[in-house]
Length: 100
Image 1: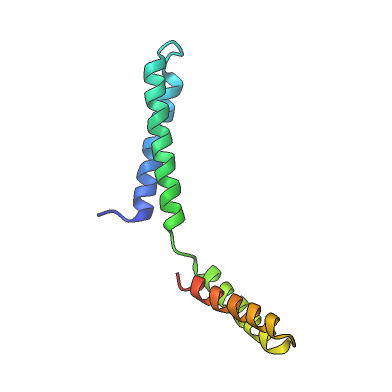
Image 2: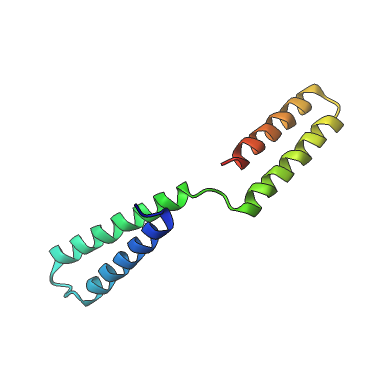
């Protein structure tokens, strides 16, 4: 079973091959060009799907955790209860997102 990075690399290679074939196909051959374009589009969509599923990087996760800590500190420092609630919810959301 291949990893997401390996699958992305494979799909990019295939997409590049289809792109080269598309460039070398006669403009009069619309059926083949349409099929090649569909194959390239399918691979592009799959690459985007895999990239969206990638976990956050190390610095992004710790950056979100630092932002959560700052937001929690701000929640303690502000006066109105609604601001404390909003900032607290934001801090919890950031912590939850940083796990993933």
